[in-house]
Length: 216
Image (cartoon, rainbow, N blue to C red; front, side, top):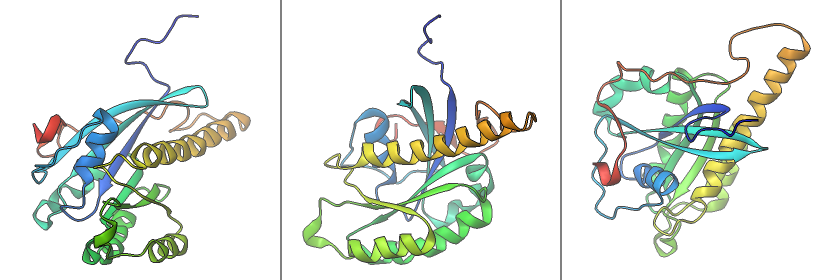
């Protein structure tokens, strides 16, 4: 049996990062995909994405992670941004309560525009700043349970739980997709979405560019 080439994979999952500007979405992305952190991060303009492959149950899962600006003026990208997404990390800053208050608004937008079966994880970022904490872990955990979300606190700066967050959401997506594929095979019906979940890039998305280091 031939070995896979570097760019071969069994599944391609599109995951979007959403949340207010400044909560650390871009640094979560760069920490997971390149193990980098940029202290002088600039606000993301438009849409960027990066990829990384992981192994789950012996399968190669390629994650295509999209990052966008949290500012209101970029709301026009909404539909293209969410199209084809099977997972979402909804990020807030544990030191800024207002970013947590806005989680409900982001959740509504996600449920309005994304696929109803999208897997959502609430992420409290900047856990290294414990002395400045403005959102209790218990409150966020309770909210997540009420809304049916998974929950984790991360530090992109210290690399705490970043790997775990992405691994967990990608594994959950894989388990759902593989169960559906198995059910389809048992019913001997061929339908859309069976087998490899390929997510096409939308070339019409504004300002789309592949993510480089520190916004390059």
